[in-house]
Length: 90
Image (cartoon, rainbow, N blue to C red; front, side, top):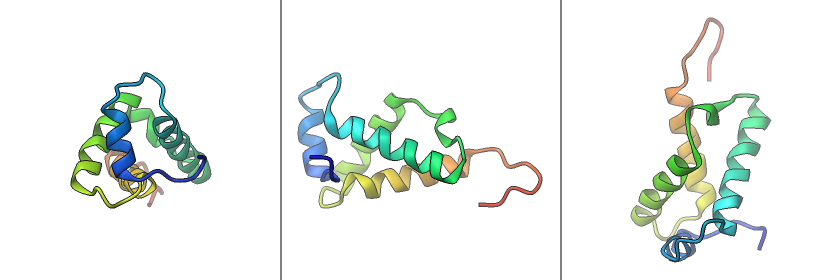
């Protein structure tokens, strides 16, 4: 599928410990797309491991949600951590 993935599916697939997994790659692409669309390099302060670990925790707490929602929430946490220069408002 190229559509969104459920947290239930995320958690099930992560337990398999696959090195490259479609939901993980989808999530990285989703976050990259958000960064590109907003022209904010929020991913510069993160790593794939950080993203996946955060999503593991988020999905355990929100099993009925989709990873797009979790990805959006994660992106917001990155934005909050970015340094703000003069004239930058988010």
